[in-house]
Image (cartoon, rainbow, N blue to C red; front, side, top):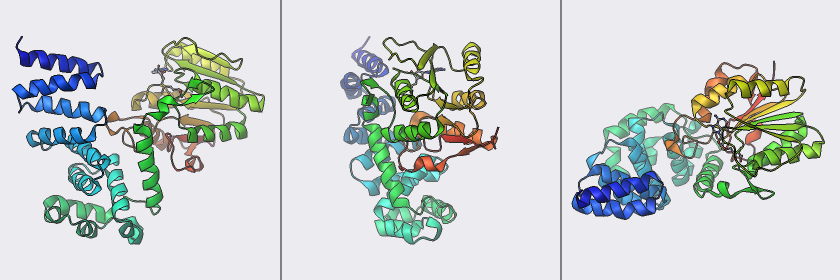
Length: 377
Ligand SMILES: C[S@@+](CC[C@H](N)C(=O)[O-])C[C@H]1O[C@@H](n2cnc3c(N)ncnc32)[C@H](O)[C@@H]1O
């Protein structure tokens, strides 16, 4: 094997193992031998991106895009790099090009809305119905070359009709920007309840506390136990009510989960017939059942879970779908169809459920539109 192949092989192996620090020098050595290899440029740009090294990632994204100018996902990531580097106008210009390709992507529109709200909030506030006037925006920001392009023309027509920014755009922008920074910092992986890690935002846990206090569920069903931190939190909230049990199911069995008399752990898939039968049995006869779906976050899995577990929720109680923020709402745009897509699909055909907007009152939630209240059988 030649030196190029050896470096490339080592780099790919390290990247696949998630060791981006080790992959990068090998990619750079391989690139010295093949500077126009756009596959390598792409990979190294992703390694820097995953390490949140925005300047290097921007540089390599640009080198890669010179070969693949129509890779709109890469353009989107480049805009994120520019945003993180404190170049919002550049980020907006790139995003507007991405939007011309596919303006239905919610995270692209969301970020355009955020950036316009940040860069020229008065244009948003004064615009009737919060519709972006792209002529005003691009003139204000001096996007002259962009203004004469076909992209600009197409988008101007599009934005004339489409309210991309809500009237309280500054509050939303602030909340979403904070949400992105909060999420990207990964502090939610270092959040603990009484010493046990749980993958939740404290603002959502406060909503949980309020719901558990008012509903006093005699059964809480949780899919996705992880280390058991959330199950312990739910059981402790039930301790204050002096009533209730928690059944938490996970496909993998982790040792040293917290023991609590209210908690029962089940091992298996949340969609496994045996697991479902066991949970149905536990729910039968309960007067107030709450469900929290926090297992596999693909849209298909969540949608199937919603169909199975929605039947067990009692009227007046909730089915909570965790992590609707994935897929660019507003975090992790590359995630693909996720919990939010499942919710939007489910709610179309479930007139007995409503999305409880009150649960968004803290502005930032990992479960935006994920608090579904059952209003009828
Ligand atoms: C996001 S974590 C759960 C976090 C936990 N509820 C918390 O707040 O700390 C997702 C968990 O779902 C589990 N999981 C993945 N697919 C599953 C499935 N089909 N059925 C049940 N659990 C699953 C994973 O093993 C993982 O522990």
